Amino acid sequence: MLLVGCAPADDAVEAIPTDPCVAHGEGIYAIDLETREILALAGHRNETGGASPIKFDVLPRDDGTFEFVYAPDLEGNLYRFTADMREPTPRSTPPELVLERAEGSRLNGPRYCDRGVVAFGDVGPTSVTLATMDAETFRERSTSTVAQARADGVLTPIQSEDFQIAADVSCRNIPEGLVYNGVDCTGTTSIDDCIADTDAVGAIRLKVSDDAAATALSAPQSDPDVIASPDRPPDVPLGDADPDLVVAGDGTRHLMFERVYATAAVFDDPTLPSEFSRFGFFKLMYKRLEPDASAPEYELDFRQWLGRTPEHVALVTPQMRIPQAATDSIEFTALGIFKTPNADRTFDEDLYTGLLTGRFDGDLSQVQDGRIVLDAADVDGVLSYAQFTCHVWDTCGYVADGDVYLYALFAPRFLRSDTRDALAFSTTRERLGSVEDGVLTFGNGTTMDAEAFRASICGP
Image (cartoon, rainbow, N blue to C red; front, side, top):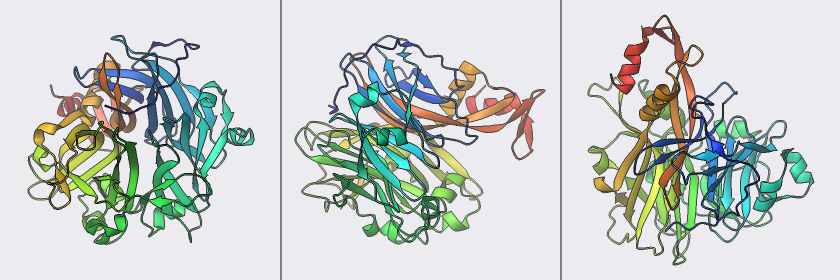
């Protein structure tokens, strides 16, 4: 059973069927876990010029619909909409802009807390702060700047200390405070400087109020992979991020998060794909905070599902579906990228890249060597990047205004109603090249028959 709160119903804005091509594949979607039907929920065109993941959260409403809050990463504004998935064709209210970013900052990572607040981060020049707003106030508020909301006294700061990064907020059904990825930027000149150069290691932290000290919930500094990292990856600090903390029905606290580490390949291997050479490797970690944060940490191991041990892995943006008792089977979803070098190590073979779900036994008494080895039958590759890209090409057209785009998926979230069990997820796209007279010209100037390339991704 997923433990969630419910939002009150509000039918002031009419929900209408979502045009799946309003933003040509960019926005928030869902996939039915039984039928594998892909459902458009909200389109949001990225106008920033770069790939911009959309961070979002979803809250069930007491009338069976769902309330969404989201923030495009590079744009940095906060939006809301409501989706009704009770009928075969989903209906959604048009996205409404609630909070606009301030000059020189951007909002990110919004989350619904079951205790009736909306939490989000604010990325400024010298810190990433955290604040909450009463959920009813958030639903009723007209568009304003975050500065105006702060002046109106409707924001409660949780982390406002300067030269600190407090990102990837989580709150779900915890009774107070916020859980987040914390990085100490003391000694740097800006957040950009900190992200690019800090030797600080990120850890999952809990803060109950702005004037309270933060409590560490994870211990990346004790992980052999972090210790052995020759350096931090170029674009992110080492350590932990994207926490999901949930209290089960028996009161036990469950924490899942991603952990960044590096090997020499990140710096020395010219054939390493850019997602690893820039960001390092990400493994998925789980711990039960019983009796406290000193509890053991376990890595989730996917080799049985893949049929081999992948050399290069990134597992990010996890979410759990928590049972009533700690010993029950625990479900989770995440974005997984699994690659391994080919025989002569000239390029990486793609084993799987996309959304996945899995489950494992909550009784960890028999776990060996700190690794939860997942049974092949308990992992499901729900939707790959390629499958979604082909869906957009088939539905909205292969070429958009003369260009061809590839699509990436992000941040899966369980979405269960009386009529449907689904995953919600966000998408972003990146320009591959342009098409003229049937010829696809890639960004580096090389060319290929456009239909031949499409067939190489989607099949004949």
